[in-house]
Amino acid sequence: MFKVLLVEDEEMIRRGIRYSIDWLQYDCIVIEEALNGQDGYEKICELKPDIIITDINMPIKDGISMIREGLQKHTFSSIIISGYNEFHLAKQALQLGVTEFLVKPLEDDQLIAALESAKTKVDLQRKYEVISNHPQETEEILSSKFMQKETKTSRYVSQMIAYVQENYAKKISIHDLVEQLDLSAYYLNQKFKAETSYTFNEFLNRYRIQKSIELLKTGDNKVYAIAQDMGFSDYKYFISIFKKYAQITPSQYQEHFGNKNL
Image (cartoon, rainbow, N blue to C red):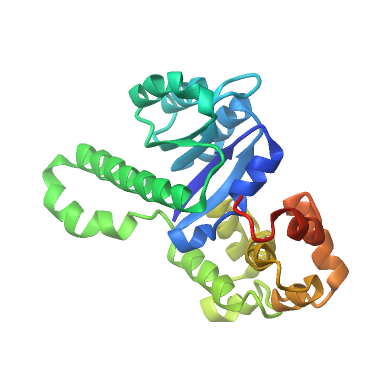
């Protein structure tokens, strides 16, 4: 699993990117959002993401400065999202090893292609780091050890994520996994939060909102029906959770973004 940090000062754009694709489908998880370059730098140091997706022009600290300073603390791959008038910064971005330089408005297929490129770069960086630390075991590392540790996601967390993907439309909780994994709910939640930055319930709700947005985009579904399809028996609770993460109501989202690209 690749950890992604979104850095964008415009909330609607940031939310649009956050909920534009099913990140888990591409073996990624958005671990956090940052409101500006300084906030992004602090989260890079704290959370050590694998991939940074950032705007360039932001208050307090711009995206280029954030990447430059962040790379001094942690190795990551970066994707820059730019306005049409910011190509003069492309040279600086290339010098920092930025994987992709995308232009707003961002299309889903562009983001997906950029993610794949960024993931490839992260894999190469990981291989290089492991081989550098164990030069006498290069062949063994490439054939077995590295492949086992490549995604940096534990078996338990992988199983928990898979459980959410398969059962999010049902009434589920972390306690369903206690007997299955033979571990306590407390341990599983601590493990899950350490690797994803979310509690199990928060991740479940975010995933449900992600999937509900996919349906809202078509503009063909009633909000109350979508709520039920996402495992929310309480319609008002669904509205509350949706607004918490998307910052607007489902009806407002459907009105503004239905049948449109973010």
